[in-house]
Length: 258
Image (cartoon, rainbow, N blue to C red; front, side, top):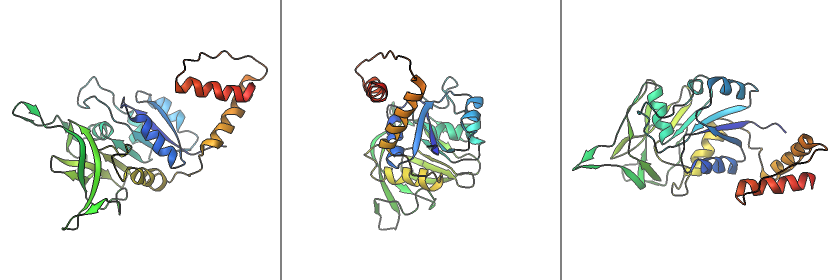
């Protein structure tokens, strides 16, 4: 079965695989690939018309450092939705003409945000519309989320508006709804962000309009059939480390060819 898909470009975050897990929990097929794929690779990857959206992961790096990775420029030219998370938001902002700066230093200490935060949702964007953990007396929708950043976006790219904010991070989310580009400074993929699954569901099922037709048990059947076709009457040598990846590969191969 051919599935519509979400591409996750990995900039090195330790929780990138959690993004994939959340997308799959929405029953949408996704793949994680390194962020340094080329425009030509991305063009070929999208050629079958099944690529419905791209997610840019977080990273420990600083987006304004010339030595750090950037998203392939074609990401923003394919005409499909893009969601930037943490560093993904920062590189999106820089690559599209915005500005990112290091955390303010007060008394020799950088004012970084790490841990629980309450974010005000602004602008009633499609991504955050009607998603909130509580409402203030002033009627502001608030989100309980997990922050992990030092750098922050300080100037929006052209066409973007502020989507979320905190007192120390005035641009904690941004959106260009005409192009369906959205970005969050916090991490919706971790369980500490209470409405994180709802946000990712809204992104992949709503904004990206991807079919919710990917189920793990179906993938197992597809993988076994694919292995049988590939191996045929040949033999397979497997290097088994005992880790999750090679153990799953061993189980699938055993089911396919014995």
